[in-house]
Image 1 (tube, one colour):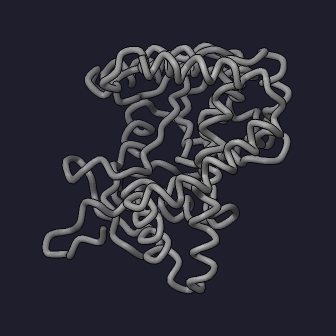
Image 2 (image 1 turned 90 degrees about the vertical axis):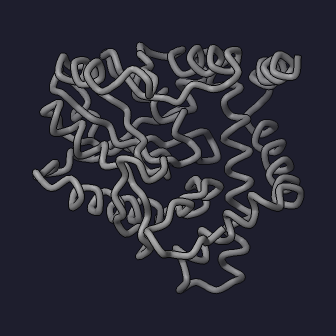
Length: 288
């Protein structure tokens, strides 16, 4: 019942002006910052670990702003997934090296966890006439799963694999010319992860970007999404030269380093609500 009401709310909100959606997100973000004390501490810890050179006042402002960006991006899924398609396309501006995504060359798209990531793959799949794939973790609520699938595939052709499908079908699709959206910049636990620096702190990181690119004989193309006053700018970067190599650990460390540069341009829009440093090296103290 609650899920149905939430989806209905998003369907109604889809028809409101963007300024109204963003204002509501601003209010929701301010409320969440106050009431979600546990998650606020996660954000504050992440910012303290990653930006020790900044003042406490800067980190406090960034923490408040990241809750606002989180809420605004969540509510933006209303018009992105339920609004008129022409309205959604008008609010998504695809920029940069779009030619990297054209043709049929095997391509892994590095799509980091900025709050606008859903807008990112919607913009790409709407503009580029290819079938895309991605890997997702199924939700416990089947209705939520169906809602996410319908929303993410609304403006283009996207096939979703689950983490239980294994590597083979993903690699097969990649080699056949279906670009793979990959979001490996989260803590998925110690299993199959390596510890590499992220802002100078050892972070458990899945080396999947390097491995899928190597297995699929694919180039890696970063796509970075920035929330703007008029919607989203989705920038396609040039494919990384010399990537991947035979050293998955070094490749993963390089991925984190380049991700830092992207984050530094818009620190409040990164997914700091996630416990990025939950898994610690042996003997290291917990941080949350």
